[in-house]
Image (tube, rainbow over all chains, first blue to last red; front, side):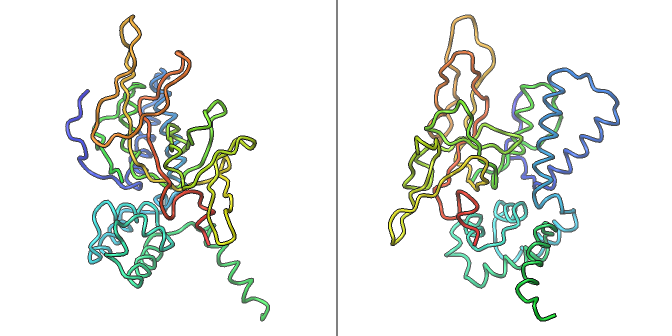
Amino acid sequence: MEVKNANAAMLSNYEVLKLLTDLKEQRRDAGKSKHSTGQQNLNTIMYETLKYLSKTPCSRQSPEIVKEFLITMMHHKLTKAEKLQLLNHRPQAAVEIQLMVEESEERLSEEQIEELIQKVADILPGDPEQENVAAADTMDEGGEQS
Amino acid sequence: MIGLRHKIKNHPSSPELKRMFLNVLIFIVNNTTVERYSCGQPFWFTVTMGFFDDILIPPESLQQPAKFDEAEQVWLWEYETEEGAHDLYMDQGEEIRFRVADEVFVDTSPTGPATATPDTPAQPGQSTAPPAQESGDKKQAPYTLIGTICESGLGLLSWWNS
């Protein structure tokens, strides 16, 4: 086997999740697989990867969300790889943005970093469990007045 | 940062080729669990993603200064504060954020009867290879990631979450 084109494209976690999910359906529909070691290895790796991805932000994304995100990011002058990072990891803090955007101190002001964090939080769905915990904490803090 | 490679065209089913499949998924890696192999050497810090285990962080790429605590069998970061050094332990099972620094491909296809060390194809910017296996029986992983946490924001998530 030879590599025809390395770096042919970058896939987001969401695309990989979709690809694996479709592949899983196909294999299921195709009936019983041969259960050779190769098939089992592939099944294992698919299952484990799907399990990992289902706990990341991409499990709550859709093509429409990804499109909206990319359109919003257009004027920030980020590279493709940087936008991919933001999409896959949904950073919530400035330190995370600094890890994903190269030379962020020179390219982005504090306000722009805050703006990015806000947009990411608005467009990309977060973990409902995490958000419930955060909401409950806020209510506890405010809460004695009711 | 390492970008994605090899868009999948076909779906191979042989165990050898499943590594190619993995290449699509091993791109910029973040947020993973920390696990030390029970038979692991104390000099390498190992990380697992659940679906991929061959991730190593060499001691020089840990947050510095780093120290291995022999008693606890755990790596730690000697974090300097005004009050002196504060030991931040890197316990097993903790989630960490790391950056992929390099990747190592090793040709593990069977060689002839004469024993030969696996060929590591020379790649530009390749860093130190993973430690040599002690027993001849243990297979070398065909694909290993070398990581680093020696940057602001990397390492245990609990270190950076306010």
